[in-house]
Amino acid sequence: MPLSLTQIFSSRALLLVSYLLLWENVTCAPTCVKRDGDTQKSLRRLFTLATFISQNTGRQAANLFTKFDKQYAQGKRYNERIPDNCPTDFLDTPENKNQVLESKPEVLLKLLCKLLYSWTDPLHHLVEEMSAMPGDPNAILSEARAIQGRVGQLILGVKTILREIGEKNDESYLVWSGLSSLKSSNEDVRCFAFYNLIRCLLRDSRRVNTFLEVLKYQIIQDKC
Image (cartoon, rainbow, N blue to C red; front, side):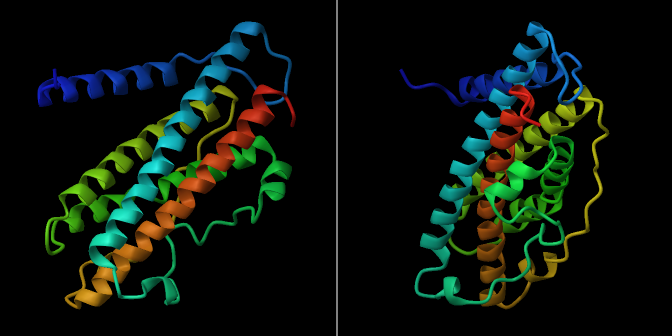
């Protein structure tokens, strides 16, 4: 028997509450020190949850890009244009997985926190402005809202991890300057701005997942 909308929203709300409770129920554990079994289990559970959310976010970002490309970018050859700046281009990020592996876990966590925070404003405006796109953008808009929620969950998770290993989270990030393009009266400029922003989101969702997988290895296995 199909679930009603009320049941679907209720189940999602319960899932979100369980996420929040798991973030909060982690024992404090400094990075790269001997930990007891309970602490190891708590951190393992926390990273398992974070990577699960990150993987889902990556899949949704890929779906978002595919849907937008199919509905709005067909025949426009946007993939051949020089891309605009991404919201996180100002960050000094590792260029490959070896550089990620060589990063100190506390440094990588703070970088991850900045990366996620840098998407707060762009995702907000992506959702706000998408509704003005021609045709029926509802499927794309639904995907974007889901990603926005998951990024919020990841921010909470990374902040919790930083706190539990004795590090302060860094909420600083540069103000995103791409809103004017999303609001452009030129349809091609506006459409390409959405295309580029979603392409950046897909790239960064993969970065987030890589960072979390490496951090899980470093912190859980004490490979610092």
